[in-house]
Length: 289
Length: 163
Image 1 (cartoon, rainbow over the protein chains, first blue to last red):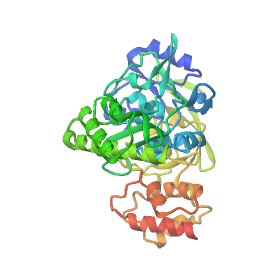
Image 2: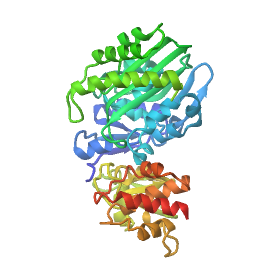
Image 3: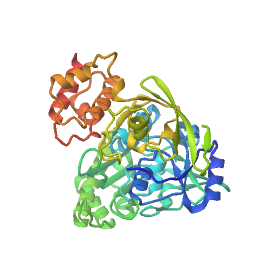
Image 4: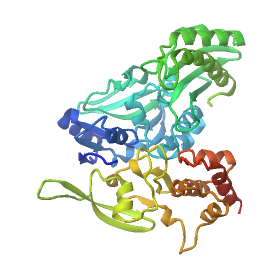
């Protein structure tokens, strides 16, 4: 399988990359890891006349902590760089674990967090845990920089608020008051499989009482979605098995799954109930895992 | 990276890619895939093409020590990086102990997945010389063996680790 011809650019700065995007218009695509884009090009699903490579933008691969801002993950950081980051392992092992359960080793060495987000696939594994931790993303364009909550970024399958001249530069995870977070996923294989259902939660516990909670459901709606009713149901309450079951049932009524090759809507709905319960129990008892 | 334009206006790039310790400087088109560069330009045909979509792992090579699928990496993106292919695992005609172990444990059936399996296993053992069976299975989970000979492959990798 060969690739069609395209014009290749390797800008030295992100501003140069944005200017190229603006100049070339809709026929241009940004190339980061390429694990998704090159596949789509081989299949003829997309046929960009221009590829703008981020190869030279080394600073976009950094994972660091900045006082007052939180953990900053460069958009070009690979999934394995996230898994192996000491900083993330210490602060949010839940993000490392979510990255570790994606695809397989070869893909994780090349695929990037920015690519995973910009593709806006409903079953993507990183957005749910990032949304549960209230992450925001920094977009850079020809007119400058803007920051938005990741939750607001997704519009529909493959659709985001990214403007044609913009590039995702950074993902910011603000300092947390939550005591635990996790992402658990059900796929048809343990490796190299998309999520049939993925549930991420972040909880703030005070003894046995849940002070705050964020529940994010993946692969069961056009975009990764919060489950606000389920969240409201658990906040301020003492945790019990009955409560967790009720919250799971509530989340399953909030999601909007479809039937597809990987699972039926009915099955996904019931898995949301089970996985919401399990994810909450895990984050409550084990912290950031 | 220097670009050259021919009379018909096609742009080509001068890349230098290190494979198995040697620098190769070649002229490639932007759409040249690393796997084709390795097989066609360098005549290193040990690296196999399977699905060509990054699912099967047949084309696995090590990029700066890490396994990647060479079918979904552009040669222009590989410029300046160091690669190891299955030809670079043996030292001076002597098979690596991992390769010996594949022979001893009959971990090869049709053989098509073997180069990729060797590369994923080599990367694992370099990083983690004493892996558990679970870690071995995880490390080769991006390499499909359609003879389904996984049992002996896992055995071979564990045996090489325990030597």
